[in-house]
Length: 407
Image (cartoon, rainbow, N blue to C red; front, side, top):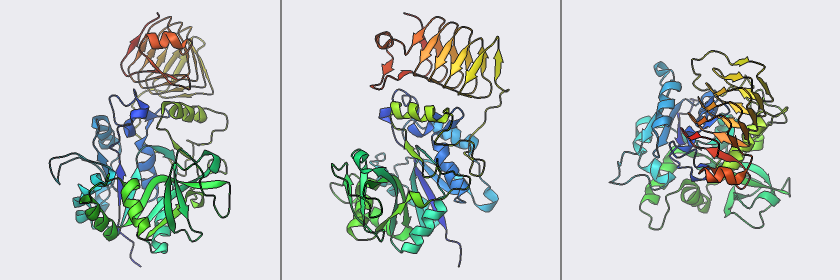
């Protein structure tokens, strides 16, 4: 049997309003994560590790840093026809930008015409997880259905914020329930429900036909999860793939089927705190399924004048000079000067923390400067008086390039 032709489309045009101010100057998939990565690196690494290496990334919102990262990092073997390419909105179907995720693919149907794939993998660009996509693809092929949706198991008590999949024991999707009060339990686990991960696989011909139909449908929001997939469900031609069945080389019982939506500041910070815990749920150090990214050409991290870091990730080029860093993530080129303490912080590239500062539960974006003697995350009213945003969970964010001084 011939190897099927597969095209991956990564939807990366999201504005990411809930991650403001981290998305004030960049698209959500370009937000730095885990010290050296960007959010988009996780889905692209999953594709590359799965052997799916013809990838189109659909961009729109403030995409410069995302496009630059892809062009510098994601270079495939062109001799074998592999590629990762950014595809901006081109107004191919009229003088308007993307009206939704389905419209983004509809306006880019030339990609499918040119590549002529048998199957189209459509994944989001901004979640943290490992997945062997080939296993989901094989399940889709075996099912004979036109559409397959990846589902993650969640406790029924926590199912309300999600789009819940109501599926038969055969895997056929009977319906979607948007933020249900009472989510249906699973046959083998009555207290769990299946939430949509926003990852889909389609038989190419069926997807093209559905996109053309949706494009002229009045009242459609032209959304993959809200319109396209429900249309396949209504036609009885959609199935679910249980993420629990996915086995990634090097995974452990603890990080098996780990998936996190880091779409809010609190969730973003919480995911970082997991990374620096003694036994993190998500293991960055799985060398059998690596997460790839661009590595800055910088020297190793340096600790001087009794500077220390405990339960922390400290990236290359960092200098911790007479400071104490605990339960924190420092991206490349960060400097923390003497007498300063950082606790449960995420500090992005080349930010500078001056002398005798105290930062708690704080995210510091790139190139920010915290002047000597400044306290952040200690008194909420002081942070808000400086114009800093503070979440309901008590996480303070210093925007990119800001200079913050003691009040």
